[in-house]
Length: 194
Image (cartoon, rainbow, N blue to C red; front, side, top):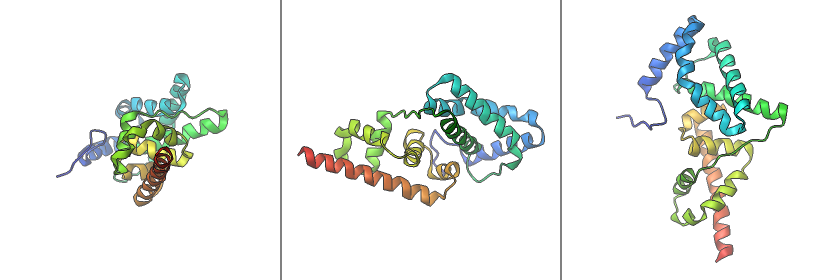
């Protein structure tokens, strides 16, 4: 039995979506259902990173323009079509940062931090959620992308790997190394306080 998170598509959903993609490749007018299905999610993804609504609208429009223009290049790789859109969105956001020297925004919620602490497999980190929030905000850009996608956006490793153009195993290893470093920071802090 396939267990699916409420955040992710089932294999059947992805196959149905692939039919829409193939139809849109033949006729750009048929891209509309994909646009309607993903516009809001892509907008939220961009807005969460730039924290400027008008800029987020502009970047999101650019994402969909690039998607429809390059749809002929899209190949199904066993992950939702959204992964390809998020990859374009990520590229557009970082292009914006380079061109306009815009500041990246990190929105961290406490529930996601608790998920991270749970994965560190130790209840002792619960009292340090505020410190964990600071430690996460201090991560390098590449590390932050991995943590955001895994814990704040609840993406499976396969989808993270597709978006960041790496192997699934590499995504897992990197995330768990980041968690180990965060865990060590919290242990050191705990020792200093004792």
